[in-house]
Amino acid sequence: MAALSVQVPYPVFYDRDGQPIDNGNIYIGEANLDPVTNPIQVYYDEALTLTASQPLVTSGGYIYRNGTPTQLYVDATDFSITVNDSKNLLVYNFPTATGIGVGAASIEYDPPFTGALTSGYTVADKLLQTVSVKDFGAVGDGVTDDTAAVQAAIDAANAVYFPSGTYLLTAAITGGDKSLSLMGDGIGVTVLLWSQVGGFDLSFNDTLQKLTINNMSLQAGLASAGTAISAIWPLVSSSTFPSTVMENIEIIPADATTHYWDNGIILENAWNGKIDNVLVRGKNNSVDMDQAIALYGRSNDFIISNVFIYFSKEAVSTGATTEGTLWSNSKVIYVNYGGVFSGSTSAPGLTVRDVHISSFIAGVITNNKPQTCISGCLFYKRAESTVSWVGIQYSAGSDDTVTTDNCFVEEGGATGATVAIVMVAGARHLVSNNVGQNMDTLVEAQASASDYSITHNRRVNGTNTVLASGTGVNIITNNEPVDAVTTFTANATTPSVLNSPSNFFNTANSSATTITNFADGYTGQTISVLANDANTTVQNNADISLQGAVNFVMTSGAILTLRRDPGLWREVARRTG
Image 1 (cartoon, one colour):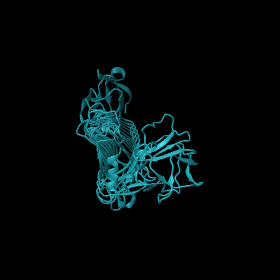
Image 2 (cartoon, one colour; image 1 turned 120 degrees about the horizontal axis):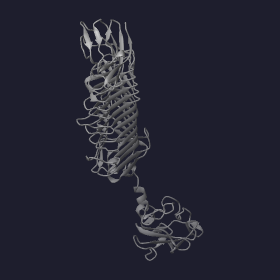
Image 3 (cartoon, rainbow, N blue to C red; image 1 turned 180 degrees about the horizontal axis):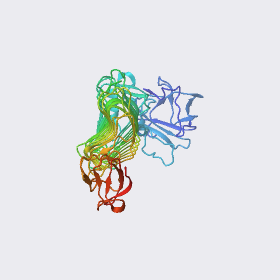
Image 4 (cartoon, rainbow, N blue to C red; image 1 turned 30 degrees about the vertical axis):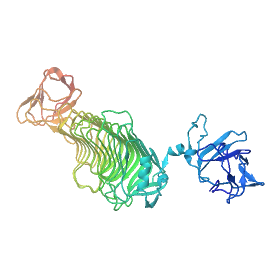
């Protein structure tokens, strides 16, 4: 036996606009059959003694008996219902019903929008469009183990909603082979807490399958809790489709003094993805967490913005073949390395801008990353650092770089050597308008670097503004303060003017020496030569054009200034002594 109402005193019948039906006709019949032609007996009482005739007629949505709204009963567990309006036109029908609880698949969903799909579109279809983990039994009280329920939800649906609450998890949540969207109610509002090694461990078999995660906190409830988010896509040579968007996420320890994630986010072959407004935090005052954000494989054309990273060995890392990374508007505190962009093959297109990095060992290191631009960043050597530190380092294969408008500071108390910008290797570096405070060296170009321009950089305190020993056409001008005047090799007839930090040169000739040319100069270079001896003559010839076309026999203290025009050094000015 089943009653037609268990939630309210009397059953109420509404039309599709939610209004009670007047003069509606209600038919009740056998389950899965038309109740108009297959009626069953309906009763007004639970004892099944007072029979009712069909169709049952409504008034204000109710069925009345003797002027009073009444209950309805049938001697069956399952039955069918058809509801018609006053013109006996169908309003809705339930092919199978059990009491008042009707399955959502049996109810047509009528969206209140013009042109909306209605035929065959049920409430169950609507509910399936976004699945809640609570649909699968998750509690979210921080005590109940919700692992099975969360896993079941992800296995069943593409879009999974985590309502506010703390979901205790005891294993990694896996998934893949389909696009997946994981949504919470907000950072600190929806919390996923792993008490055992866990995180999201996701794998996709097609680059068109997307991953979206937003509005939630992922907490590590133990030391060395694994990787918070790990996702891998198949390797493809090119893609213009975005793989993932991660926004408004917090990856933190539940207890910052003892707990931590081993890694925050690790992605492989994630083309055209975006990580935005994400906090990754390790254990307090430690670098126990390895990598906060790491991109491997062909994770190309990826945007990382507005991230906050605290307490890790490496804040942002990319692998051998990852190209086109843009990292911007971020803050990194208490790390060994801010950015490690390295690979075994040439992977161009790195941009780092407006990022604050406070590190122990290095700010940004690149290897095989040509076409790199680093600008507008603030680099700190932490006061606790006792080792050698570099702000930006370009290593082998890092060609065609631009480093501009950055600031480098060594905090008080730090020890060990400090270099703001060093070109270990690579060609065609442009370094300009950078400022360094308390740097041992502001800009260093080592022997394997070539064809660089170092201009308009400023050192505050520290020791060296520019140290340069590379090859090629190297332009070094307008850097302050000037460290020293370069001394020519004694008795050289074609002394080199390459890599001088100031373009000021002294002679130191111990015997009569005639200079016939200045080697390694570039067009537009202006040099000044001070005679620190009485043994130097500069010859007027096809390579050097002097005033009056006459050799300049320099007395001690004489100064000669020349400009390099195309193919020729031309005298600009002289002082005779």
